[in-house]
Amino acid sequence: MRVFIGQDPSPRIAAALAADGAELVDDLDSAEALVYTTEFPDSPDGSGLPALPEAVRWVQFCQAGVEPFAARIAAEPERRWTNAAGAFGLQVAESALALLLSVLHMHPTTVRAGSWSAQPAMDAGTRWLDGARVLVLGAGGIGARLIPALRALGAEAIAVTRSGREVPGARRSAAFAELDRLWAEADHLVVCCPLTEDTRGLVNAAALARLRPGAVVVNVARGPVVDTAALVDALDSGRLGGAGLDVTDPEPLPDGHPLWAMPNVLITPHTANTRASTDALLAPLVAENHRRLRTGREPLTGVRPGRGY
Image (cartoon, rainbow, N blue to C red; front, top):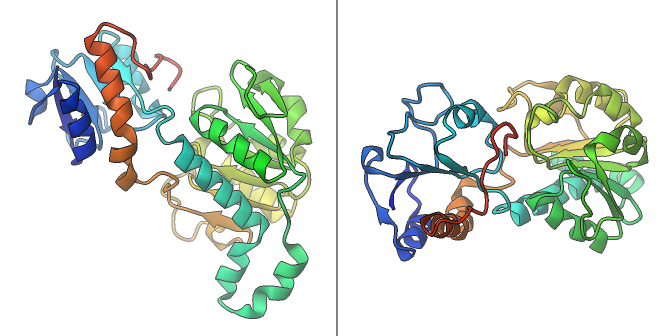
């Protein structure tokens, strides 16, 4: 199979594909497959995905959530589309846990103070994860890695998935359809589900109001899953204990936005998984998808049209 990797240099992906027999080509017009690593400036629909020659039968994305490309995927069902589901789960789960612990331990307070003067407030307000109940929205590659880490620190997880399947390590597993009765059981909330039409705005004012007082909200999924205005209001009111956000809506979050100034909010600029780590983490998955497709089997991470992942 002739594969074009575009456009970021990805030496480990290239080496893994070559080891599996792929022929690496230097331009898309010569390719039968595209490993999409970054935006193309001449994208016809503004998504970053270029117009694809008819010969391109497989597109491998370098992210798990492919909602920006949903229209193209639906309109071109003759191609095979695969994503990066699960490839970055451990790294993003680590970031989610770091955000949650940092807010509970009031790390933003001492960073903003820039001095030892933060000690009395931190001594009075620091909280612990041990004994807490954490509602984990989405138990795919990220949630499945996060839940054992929560358990190791004495917390229990309620794992929520589309199907409600049993999730290893969770105290309880439930479906998204059951959320109305689950919000009130959560000491904290971690959002790590795909962005779909069903999850857009899922964490809204009503949901935030039902979380237990002092809850910390962490979002490492996609910004629009959480209603930003509702989050700001809930933080302003003191009902929420804080937020740790690797993704926001809008994104990038504009300078001067109220969230930047809140003392109990920690924001990272969509770096729970970094671009620099993508090449190494994704290489084995891309090679396996290539191996399966060239031998007539289903790829590991085929995208289902209409689902966004």
